[in-house]
Amino acid sequence: ISIKESWDNDFSNVRIGDALSRAIEITANGLDGAALPPLVQTPIDTVNAYPEPHQISRTYVDGNVVGKRIETTSLLMTATGNVQIPGVSLPWFDIDTEEVKYATIAESSIRVGPTRTASANNSLQLSTDANGTLLADGDGDVAANNAPAFDTSVLDSLVSETKTPLWVLVLAA
Image 1 (cartoon, one colour):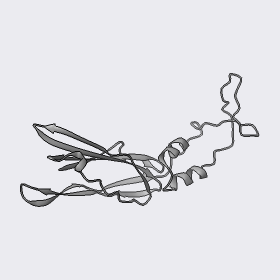
Image 2 (tube, rainbow, N blue to C red):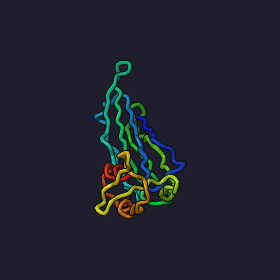
Image 3 (tube, rainbow, N blue to C red):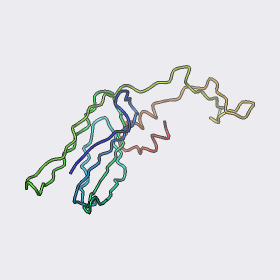
Image 4 (cartoon, rainbow, N blue to C red):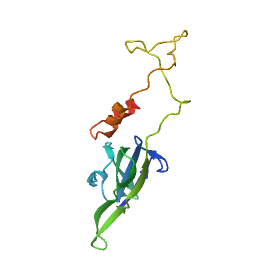
């Protein structure tokens, strides 16, 4: 049995509100992918975890079955500081040596910085009427004028809630 992890992004500039995807792949010679056990998801403080459906496959190499299970989890950072991503240890029995062995992934550490803020040059400001309807300029395009600043407290509360679905966070961003 072998186990490996991959990340969709590096850890060099992670901020509150950023999501990283961690994929853990388990491969076993002589075992169907459906027989590989699901991994236990350990809760992580200051991170909301959103597991995706696992992928199971079976192939044949030189007449032997090779099973594979891939578990992917999106990790949404909700606070600044160092985040410890737990390692994984998967016990398995080696029939050649008749002993229990462990396939492992070491824990990872991610430094999470404060939220990104848009500079005055990059911020998009929209004009609305008294009813909150977006106003258009003469070309029919939405006018980019000096509108009131967006209240980020709603977004901050969505990001910090552990039960907020990932699709809501993507729409809010």
